[in-house]
Length: 424
Image (cartoon, rainbow, N blue to C red):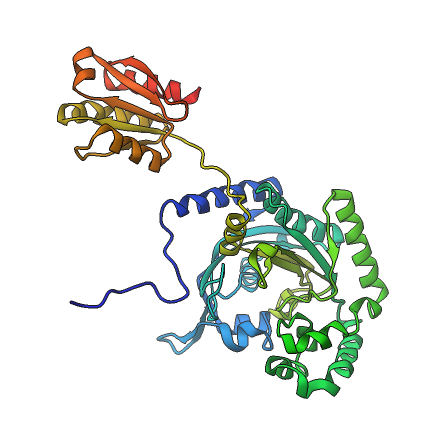
């Protein structure tokens, strides 16, 4: 016997009923994005490797050790999409969208990173995110945070917390970088191997370290607010005022720096203790220099990415999964003649826009009703030999467990009566 083939490590199959949870979340995302005026963008699953080296940054974990990179048959280096922002910016430049003015775009889709699989994080995972380009004002930052916050709050998650920070810009960040180097260098031998590797290339990344041996040195590191220039300080103060106006609770966390090199000024995360140590479910910020680094004009931009697997894990752990709404009709036929009668009725119900489910096996009524529950049907339309003799069908409300009888009319008429009951 040949060995069983399974999904690659770090990937998963999405099957019912879990797929229904994803559909519910995706429906909320599409509706939410539309309310804020964002249009959907879809980019290729793979791009030129150079896009991520230039856009994401050579010193990031993504580029250094997490990308799925391959050489295609034309000898070109290609990489499976490890994040969305650089591809979205590439697409905007390629299609001259920026020439049309500010852009609001959102996406839902997979990313690929080679890392150790953990709770809510896979080697193929999925993200929802938005990119708002063309606005330098802090109101854009607050708008982007509002999109993420509204989605999280729509699930009634009480544990979620918004953390914000400013990491300065090209004017003030170099001074902060030197201050961090002066702080960490004397203790370099005591730091983790990752910290030792990052210290000269990007010392801000040390503030994001989760290693226990780095913790005391991170805790005593100088804070960015002492080094912000006037423009960054004013931008951050205005952002906080906007969040206050919007009634969005937040905490300033000077240790949030995010892991990608393109961030400037605003950075933020939405965190939840439901996920344990890996507590960030959503993160983003401002990246005003990214478009320029990809060969485009100076373009202010801000956005976020939310991990869908992590978010759904957080929702489930917090017990905030919304109850599945019953919908549709289970057509239950007890016998061959009943099946022949119900088959065209089920087809008419579907044509009228209502889901109709039908099982074609010989089963007892109780077994059929269990299938109806599994399908989440609101009603069961039942016909057996007794109903055929009486010229009636039984319509059972599977929520209230009450029955009513409908005349066995021609399929279109009976289907219309069932759909009318479903609409009540």
